[in-house]
Amino acid sequence: KQEVTQIPAALSVPEGENLVLNCSFTDSAIYNLQWFRQDPGKGLTSLLLIQSSQREQTSGRLNASLDKSSGRSTLYIAASQPGDSATYLCAVVYNQGGKLIFGQGTELSVKP
Amino acid sequence: GAVVSQHPSRVICKSGTSVKIECRSLDFQATTMFWYRQFPKKSLMLMATSNEGSKATYEQGVEKDKFLINHASLTLSTLTVTSAHPEDSSFYICSARTSYEQYFGPGTRLTVT
Image (cartoon, rainbow over all chains, first blue to last red; front, side, top):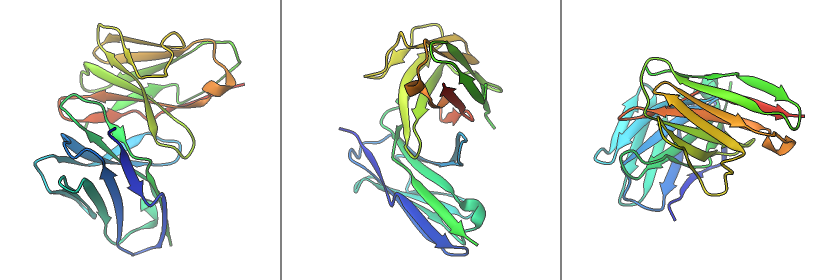
Protein backbone atom coordinates (compact mmCIF):
# COMPACT_ATOMS: atom_id res chain seq x y z
CA LYS A 1 0.00 0.00 0.00
CA GLN A 2 1.32 3.43 -0.93
CA GLU A 3 1.44 5.57 2.20
CA VAL A 4 2.94 8.90 3.16
CA THR A 5 3.96 9.61 6.73
CA GLN A 6 4.99 12.90 8.29
CA ILE A 7 6.89 13.29 11.52
CA PRO A 8 6.43 15.07 13.84
CA ALA A 9 2.69 15.67 13.90
CA ALA A 10 3.25 18.96 15.69
CA LEU A 11 6.27 21.13 16.33
CA SER A 12 6.76 24.30 18.35
CA VAL A 13 9.94 26.34 18.02
CA PRO A 14 11.14 29.80 19.04
CA GLU A 15 11.45 32.44 16.38
CA GLY A 16 14.74 32.42 14.48
CA GLU A 17 15.36 28.71 14.80
CA ASN A 18 16.13 26.55 11.78
CA LEU A 19 13.94 23.48 11.55
CA VAL A 20 13.37 20.33 9.54
CA LEU A 21 10.10 18.62 8.73
CA ASN A 22 10.17 15.01 7.63
CA CYS A 23 8.16 13.06 5.09
CA SER A 24 8.53 9.40 4.21
CA PHE A 25 6.80 7.30 1.58
CA THR A 26 6.54 3.54 1.35
CA ASP A 27 6.93 3.09 -2.41
CA SER A 28 10.02 4.82 -3.76
CA ALA A 29 8.88 4.80 -7.41
CA ILE A 30 7.38 8.27 -7.22
CA TYR A 31 6.82 10.65 -10.13
CA ASN A 32 7.13 13.78 -8.01
CA LEU A 33 6.76 15.07 -4.47
CA GLN A 34 5.21 18.32 -3.38
CA TRP A 35 5.22 20.32 -0.14
CA PHE A 36 2.19 22.42 0.72
CA ARG A 37 1.30 24.92 3.38
CA GLN A 38 -2.18 25.16 4.86
CA ASP A 39 -3.31 27.97 7.14
CA PRO A 40 -6.26 27.25 9.48
CA GLY A 41 -9.53 27.13 7.57
CA LYS A 42 -7.82 27.76 4.25
CA GLY A 43 -6.87 25.85 1.15
CA LEU A 44 -3.42 24.60 0.23
CA THR A 45 -0.57 26.68 -1.10
CA SER A 46 2.11 24.87 -3.04
CA LEU A 47 5.59 25.58 -1.67
CA LEU A 48 7.95 23.34 -3.59
CA LEU A 49 7.63 20.62 -6.22
CA ILE A 50 10.45 18.11 -6.70
CA GLN A 51 10.48 15.88 -9.73
CA SER A 52 11.72 12.32 -9.27
CA SER A 53 14.94 13.15 -11.11
CA GLN A 54 15.75 16.04 -8.78
CA ARG A 55 17.45 15.99 -5.38
CA GLU A 56 16.28 19.32 -4.03
CA GLN A 57 14.42 22.53 -4.65
CA THR A 58 14.84 25.89 -2.98
CA SER A 59 12.58 28.89 -2.60
CA GLY A 60 13.68 31.68 -0.30
CA ARG A 61 14.12 30.32 3.21
CA LEU A 62 12.71 26.94 2.21
CA ASN A 63 14.68 23.99 0.92
CA ALA A 64 13.17 20.63 0.13
CA SER A 65 15.27 17.55 -0.48
CA LEU A 66 14.33 14.22 -1.98
CA ASP A 67 16.01 10.85 -1.44
CA LYS A 68 14.03 8.35 -3.46
CA SER A 69 16.14 5.36 -2.51
CA SER A 70 15.34 5.80 1.15
CA GLY A 71 11.80 7.02 0.55
CA ARG A 72 12.32 10.33 2.31
CA SER A 73 11.95 14.04 1.84
CA THR A 74 12.74 16.88 4.18
CA LEU A 75 11.56 20.45 4.25
CA TYR A 76 14.12 22.78 5.80
CA ILE A 77 12.96 26.17 7.01
CA ALA A 78 15.70 28.64 7.83
CA ALA A 79 15.38 31.44 10.36
CA SER A 80 11.78 30.63 11.20
CA GLN A 81 9.27 33.44 11.72
CA PRO A 82 5.87 33.54 13.47
CA GLY A 83 4.33 33.92 10.01
CA ASP A 84 5.60 30.44 9.17
CA SER A 85 3.11 28.98 11.64
CA ALA A 86 0.82 26.68 9.66
CA THR A 87 0.32 23.04 8.80
CA TYR A 88 2.79 21.65 6.29
CA LEU A 89 1.72 18.76 4.11
CA CYS A 90 3.76 16.63 1.80
CA ALA A 91 2.22 14.64 -1.02
CA VAL A 92 3.51 12.26 -3.67
CA VAL A 93 2.33 11.33 -7.14
CA TYR A 94 3.27 7.94 -8.54
CA ASN A 95 2.67 8.53 -12.20
CA GLN A 96 2.02 11.43 -14.52
CA GLY A 97 -1.59 12.36 -14.16
CA GLY A 98 -1.91 10.32 -11.00
CA LYS A 99 -3.52 11.44 -7.79
CA LEU A 100 -1.76 13.10 -4.90
CA ILE A 101 -1.28 10.94 -1.84
CA PHE A 102 -1.01 13.14 1.24
CA GLY A 103 0.74 12.75 4.54
CA GLN A 104 -1.03 13.68 7.74
CA GLY A 105 0.76 17.00 8.00
CA THR A 106 2.99 18.68 10.57
CA GLU A 107 1.45 21.54 12.52
CA LEU A 108 4.17 24.12 13.05
CA SER A 109 4.03 26.88 15.62
CA VAL A 110 6.77 29.51 15.69
CA LYS A 111 6.72 31.47 18.92
CA PRO A 112 7.84 35.12 18.91
CA GLY B 1 0.06 32.00 -11.23
CA ALA B 2 -2.78 29.53 -11.52
CA VAL B 3 -5.77 30.41 -9.36
CA VAL B 4 -8.61 28.18 -8.29
CA SER B 5 -11.70 29.64 -6.67
CA GLN B 6 -14.49 28.03 -4.69
CA HIS B 7 -17.94 29.30 -3.95
CA PRO B 8 -19.33 29.59 -1.38
CA SER B 9 -16.55 29.80 1.18
CA ARG B 10 -18.97 28.93 3.97
CA VAL B 11 -22.44 27.47 3.93
CA ILE B 12 -24.85 26.44 6.64
CA CYS B 13 -27.80 24.32 5.65
CA LYS B 14 -30.51 22.32 7.30
CA SER B 15 -30.48 18.56 7.41
CA GLY B 16 -32.17 17.05 4.37
CA THR B 17 -31.40 19.87 1.97
CA SER B 18 -28.88 19.81 -0.87
CA VAL B 19 -25.90 22.08 -1.24
CA LYS B 20 -23.88 22.88 -4.35
CA ILE B 21 -20.24 23.93 -4.23
CA GLU B 22 -18.54 25.41 -7.28
CA CYS B 23 -14.90 25.11 -8.20
CA ARG B 24 -13.44 27.27 -10.95
CA SER B 25 -10.01 27.51 -12.51
CA LEU B 26 -9.72 31.23 -13.18
CA ASP B 27 -6.80 31.59 -15.54
CA PHE B 28 -6.26 28.15 -16.99
CA GLN B 29 -8.20 25.22 -18.36
CA ALA B 30 -8.31 22.05 -16.31
CA THR B 31 -9.32 18.79 -17.88
CA THR B 32 -9.10 17.19 -14.47
CA MET B 33 -10.35 18.47 -11.15
CA PHE B 34 -10.32 16.78 -7.79
CA TRP B 35 -12.58 17.00 -4.75
CA TYR B 36 -11.22 16.46 -1.26
CA ARG B 37 -12.73 16.35 2.17
CA GLN B 38 -10.83 17.35 5.27
CA PHE B 39 -11.76 16.66 8.86
CA PRO B 40 -10.38 18.81 11.70
CA LYS B 41 -6.70 18.22 12.33
CA LYS B 42 -6.64 15.61 9.57
CA SER B 43 -5.16 15.39 6.13
CA LEU B 44 -7.05 15.64 2.86
CA MET B 45 -9.10 12.68 1.77
CA LEU B 46 -9.64 12.37 -1.97
CA MET B 47 -13.31 11.90 -2.72
CA ALA B 48 -13.39 11.84 -6.50
CA THR B 49 -11.61 12.74 -9.69
CA SER B 50 -13.61 14.82 -12.12
CA ASN B 51 -12.85 14.79 -15.84
CA GLU B 52 -14.43 17.31 -18.18
CA GLY B 53 -17.18 15.76 -20.22
CA SER B 54 -17.20 12.40 -18.51
CA LYS B 55 -18.38 10.80 -15.31
CA ALA B 56 -16.40 11.34 -12.15
CA THR B 57 -14.34 8.55 -10.67
CA TYR B 58 -15.11 8.07 -7.00
CA GLU B 59 -12.77 6.73 -4.36
CA GLN B 60 -13.71 3.65 -2.44
CA GLY B 61 -16.27 4.34 0.24
CA VAL B 62 -17.55 7.59 -1.26
CA GLU B 63 -21.21 7.46 -2.24
CA LYS B 64 -21.62 8.79 -5.77
CA ASP B 65 -25.34 9.36 -5.30
CA LYS B 66 -24.65 11.36 -2.18
CA PHE B 67 -21.89 13.50 -3.62
CA LEU B 68 -22.83 14.43 -7.17
CA ILE B 69 -20.01 15.80 -9.28
CA ASN B 70 -20.41 17.58 -12.58
CA HIS B 71 -17.52 18.85 -14.68
CA ALA B 72 -19.42 20.84 -17.25
CA SER B 73 -16.55 22.81 -18.73
CA LEU B 74 -12.78 23.08 -18.66
CA THR B 75 -13.00 25.71 -15.94
CA LEU B 76 -15.89 24.57 -13.77
CA SER B 77 -16.65 21.57 -11.60
CA THR B 78 -19.47 21.35 -9.08
CA LEU B 79 -19.99 19.15 -6.05
CA THR B 80 -23.55 18.74 -4.82
CA VAL B 81 -24.07 17.22 -1.39
CA THR B 82 -27.54 15.73 -1.60
CA SER B 83 -29.84 15.27 1.38
CA ALA B 84 -27.16 16.60 3.68
CA HIS B 85 -26.83 15.33 7.21
CA PRO B 86 -24.78 16.63 10.16
CA GLU B 87 -22.10 14.01 9.50
CA ASP B 88 -21.52 15.64 6.10
CA SER B 89 -20.29 18.74 7.88
CA SER B 90 -16.70 19.18 6.83
CA PHE B 91 -14.20 21.27 4.90
CA TYR B 92 -14.37 20.55 1.18
CA ILE B 93 -11.44 21.50 -1.05
CA CYS B 94 -11.23 21.28 -4.81
CA SER B 95 -8.13 21.16 -6.93
CA ALA B 96 -7.47 21.67 -10.63
CA ARG B 97 -4.58 20.17 -12.51
CA THR B 98 -2.40 21.51 -15.28
CA SER B 99 0.16 19.39 -17.07
CA TYR B 100 2.59 19.82 -14.21
CA GLU B 101 0.90 20.70 -10.95
CA GLN B 102 -2.29 20.71 -8.98
CA TYR B 103 -3.63 23.98 -7.68
CA PHE B 104 -6.01 24.09 -4.76
CA GLY B 105 -9.04 26.19 -4.03
CA PRO B 106 -9.52 28.00 -0.71
CA GLY B 107 -12.02 25.46 0.55
CA THR B 108 -15.68 25.50 1.52
CA ARG B 109 -16.79 25.01 5.12
CA LEU B 110 -20.08 23.13 5.16
CA THR B 111 -22.11 22.98 8.34
CA VAL B 112 -25.29 20.93 8.39
CA THR B 113 -27.63 21.67 11.29
